[in-house]
Length: 266
Image (cartoon, rainbow, N blue to C red):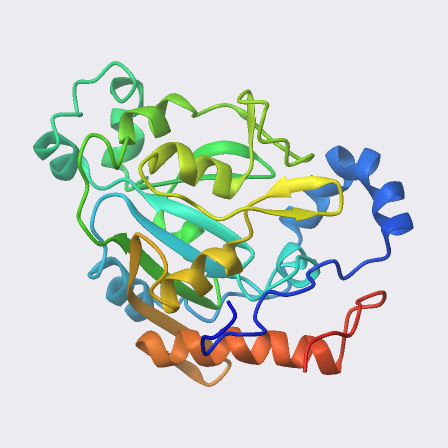
């Protein structure tokens, strides 16, 4: 991100000493579900008015980057954003796209009619979610293809076909039978070049890298808007809010690092 407003964002994300990660790696299939299901409090964007405001902005195949510091997983992962989900759309949206009667979609008609409009890969595997679950977060950015969805850019059918797969605790992008969140996003948005990096022994896609490139206008995606919540309330803060929060998280991490972080940010 050199030469941009986010010049120091996302650098040096190896917060934990390598020996700690070597011990944790084989335990992640056991520890991961525990971390993923520990919730400290409600998300700041959970009030019904916030949820409705977010839903009003969404279009099919939008990608949402979530900052969920109300969860243990959100506090232990590096970065402001710890998770991404895809918005597939409603029954009407899928009918307009000619997908409602697709064999990959038909088994999920009841779930979609019950508001399961999102797909995500988390510690419970790849599954559909409703707004109450998907938007139970503190802040989020809505990202959308600049040129719109085409058959070579978006593939909701392929995303539906991943439902039921296990979560990839090893972040191994070469194993399609198990997926983590940004890996699922890449399947749903095959025409988008999502950024990856080498982190410890993994090659993976961090949500912060994705949002940072969007904010720097170096991505095929654009920022639709950003929502921010605190204990005092929520608001739609747009690009300035996303920029401020992302810069602030990495600035604070440099001052008060997680144990083992290398201090290189200035």
